[in-house]
Length: 258
Length: 149
Image (cartoon, rainbow over all chains, first blue to last red; front, side, top):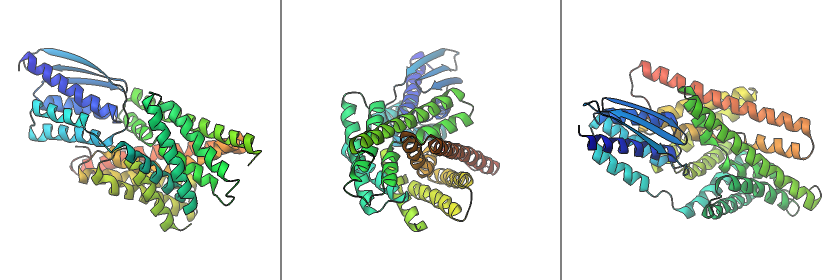
């Protein structure tokens, strides 16, 4: 195996790891995928260490040449289809002997792949919030209003995203409005089930994936990533709680205990 | 509220959440069905007098086992199914109640709601861990391919 080839394989492994991590995959999955793919490409030794902000890979070819690469990871968003596609490429590499150049081309295509159109995120949030509102005991009117509140929150997130203030600010503002609007409407529509509406509107923002990843990473002995994901989940919940509390406080001040 | 309404609304909510996570199109419906089934089991167990933490644990365990099996059969990553199995059980309502009570000065009731939400989260965590471990133990011992591979 030539030096250039080893470098190409290392770059391919880094790309696979980065795509998984940037799109919401677990760190154990990054490490496992990198090692399996590396061995399938003919490397004699592959070691990988991943944390949520970076990946370190060391590999050795048959001639004994050792290469090490560090890949900084900046979290993009959650895109489980991309994580699933990288897993598919890894499986093909391992079971069907997909050559590394073809794997790299496929990975590059996956990394560039467009997901759901941006505008579709608004009805998705509305659907999620409205469904959970009914599950928590709301009626169809409550669900309709909750869907609109969630659409407003998501529109705001998308606007804030343009100013690179997406995560924390959008969670705070989103949960603020998710509480403020239903409680405010209660004055004019006294029959509303505000508890179900607020809880429903908060649901699309809850850290479900971070919780799952925290458990999966911790179970495989990766305490650093487990604690990191758990911290992300707690921080998200705290921001939602803070925004929600501010919204309820504000409406009480404006409406005198409505 | 009838169990049918609960299951249907849970399905719709989970479907929306699946779209937010950019879940592969082919897994949208099965993953949402698993989420609805997990919540349906929790709702049923609670309605027949099962303590809430136990109902949450069993709902999560059931959802995780179903999700792992579905991931194995569909050759998809288990994260999709496990995340969507638990999303309707995450205590959004409990979190809101806690904040609402604390914000209105009812500290004792607020703390109680907060502790209850924390117990729910702990039960979900335990349910995922036990479900994943059990599934790998059973499937591994029969020599079937594991989920994710």
